[in-house]
Image 1 (cartoon, rainbow, N blue to C red):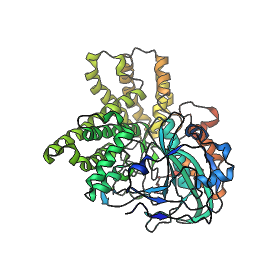
Image 2: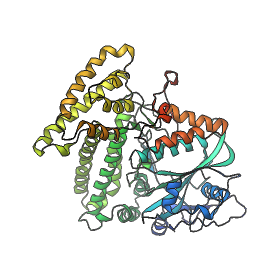
Image 3: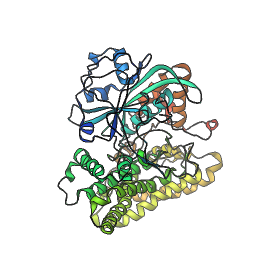
Image 4: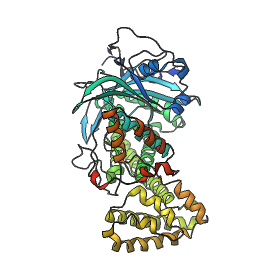
Length: 521
């Protein structure tokens, strides 16, 4: 593969726009051979649907330099922006456990990196901007529904304090794109600290190109983990750090009831950010083996499997680094295995801390001598509640939100979540609640402070599946984005309950049925 290959724009002439962004190109400059230069296709009639004004301001985007038409054209990918050097990145990946030696950005374009107003480095990346050298038989396009889904999910995750790519803009292209039917074409502009994946390492490792693997590892250390530069064993330290980041990420997913749906190694970032919101969703009724993806017939990426798959992905990452961890292969394997085993410890510690916080508990207020025994008893308390939720099909987010209302002894908010046929089972919750209140008594905070803390940990608003589908239907069928704007406004402040959004806290209606999602963007 030559980095001099390019996919030309369909535009007859390209106007260079001054966005005010301070572009840099460390990936392109330092990692020749890791990409193909590319220009997005010119949209027939680009129109801006949504710009994330706060994020744009943080990045330094000077919207006053551009009219709406120019801004839409720039974010659709078909007009040259001052300072950009668009590329499609190459990577491989295990997809549902099967290795594909070459994938890459088939409908995505990296415009470049920018240094934001705080000096932090971010990629600006377009999805749906047209064919690239990695498109194979695809058209390189995206349609409005999946683009709006990713915008909502990414921004929801950000405001839920989960590491994630962020949504910068949604642009419609003015063309109709064939999927199962003709749908409005769209492009998503998103932002991440980088788009380097486990699959990026796998691409070169599978070809025996150890020099490129080492260059990539050195680049990742310098860009994401500079504190490891002087480490005695920097590549082992890199593995450990990425394991830690992934363990934290997945613990956060689990704590809010999020199912990624396609945890392939090409969707596993070295930075520890959630990426590629395709067949993803949030739990309604708590079901550990819940699967939302239309193609996950075996439940590989079910909700409860996510920690195991995270560790599996880290094992694939470790395989690419063995030659640099130790020159003795058996010693390298032993050291890497030890690092992978720490993944379980990292995950458990993060998960327990997050779940404790949802229940108003904190180890910080407990004497050190009690911490070890409390870990076991708190874990039993948490899993006991989850078992109750599973047995009674209780809404995950609603239940945790309602718990804060029971601190004063009034259990009616939770009782309402039990169906009439489940009322006899409510006694089991009462028994659990007494155990929880006994544990609460060990805390040094007041009940009012604990309630406030819980409300700040358990969201009132999540992108519920039926609401997301309503947004998509309104956009696809009527070009109506009012429901998108309303849901987005609630998701941008998810812990603060407001009367005007009361309908957005409700579980899906019974006629909504089972929910299936598809890879769309």
